[in-house]
Length: 433
Image (tube, one colour):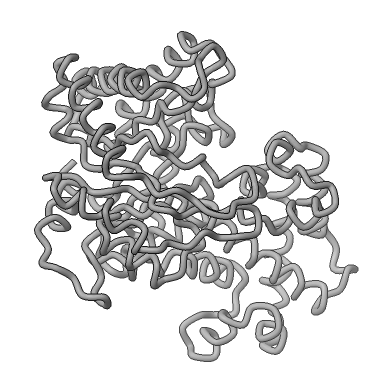
């Protein structure tokens, strides 16, 4: 689509950058939480910038995903939030992240890929125009790891499904653009504790690009390959439960030099959550022009809600009525462990992992009815009994400063939005419009 193609074009045409100027690029916010999406839309609108909102194959698919939404549902959901925020829908870009067999990888490959083809077609038919083709995972009857030629062949199958869906959609609009890559970080963060990461080599990136170019050409998809705008590689960034692997530009220098030789292509950096503002800006300057954030945004949302819950306990006490938010969330997580059990393996630190892990498995539980009731009750009680500034200073100091400066009202919903937006602003500052 033209917005994404223009961002890539301007990034590639930009003059050499110094160590302080932002590069042309765009943050990609991968979340289904309404507060995160609304905060993204508001921040982008304030700057007159396009907003790239992405859904993953686990969140949103033809079976509903863990959000219960199909691609059409998600599009309507985001458009309603955009309308509420007064955002021009022409500045909204919808993307599909990790679109492939990941949600069905426990099935045999034939069944999983058939499901993935339907999913990709549904995304495109619903108006998603940035499509990440990710077939890097092995299915039930596949070898581990999956050979790269097979990954490329499966990406071609999904691209064909996407192209057919676009052509068959009435008022189809602009054709989709694509992201490819085989060295793809695990969606949502690492499962295990990490010490270091190997950066993708230029040779590996070149081989992946050549395999995909050949596979696309063999399927008659040369025109679609012209719309491949980015590759996902490993720049050496990741996070585990309580630690962040920071970007080290000297380790990715050869990789950055490689992409400079590829017309029309940039890198897409996954798992950039929790990188410092300076490192995000350096990633963008090193041609990681699409910076993805997901768990980091809902982690900030959770931090703010925890702060509001602590304020309520001090201000109104336990006799305030209603469910205690933190107790409710952790109780639901323990009663329904499916979303975190494969990730949190250390019983000695389970309570800390459940509440505070950077992988933020809590994000799967915000739609649970009991959790929604507890959140709504907390915000309602603080709306009717606003806390004193002293408690904001103690538990939400950034919001306190903004309230004192007159930039923010002491209203719980606004305090929550502000806290969430704090995780997004470094991405917007790292990327020039």
